[in-house]
Length: 175
Image 1 (cartoon, helix red, strand yellow):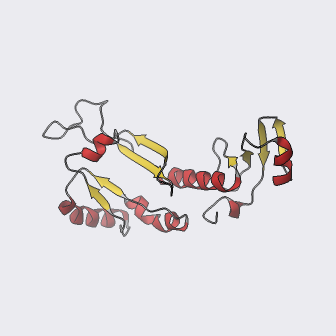
Image 2 (cartoon, helix red, strand yellow):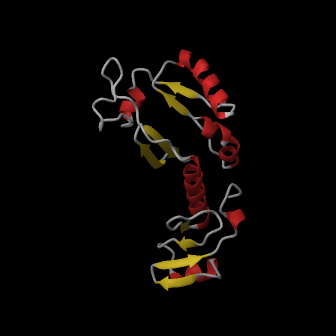
Image 3 (tube, helix red, strand yellow):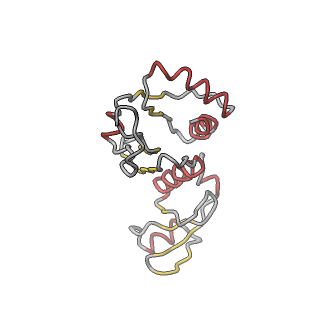
């Protein structure tokens, strides 16, 4: 969570609000946040939901069912590390689920946000390993004639695969 706290200004530029979920009580969060800030050099400000009974984790399938030994003293499975990207219309657009043994990748979360926002604004999709500034793919729903008007530099590889450029400032926090 410290890495997300450090990048909170980047998420804020993109209109993203961060929320954490903990399998502990809200009362325990003060000490935990202090430890996170001390260890990571961050200043965690976003809210963290207390889910000691793991009701939220259970509802969103965030429990580690793969490892039967990964349970607490009550036998309740520990949570996996999940990321949900929810758009302004309250639609879940991305779910990332990492095993409990694997940390999340904040750069990938930012990249996904940039991809979703760029796609929503410009009617494009992003190819494998895309980062802001790379070429994008014209959305398949756009006819080639329309694509050539919207994107003068469109490169038609196949009728269904048309690449175009977007300036980096159109594919980052500025979208």
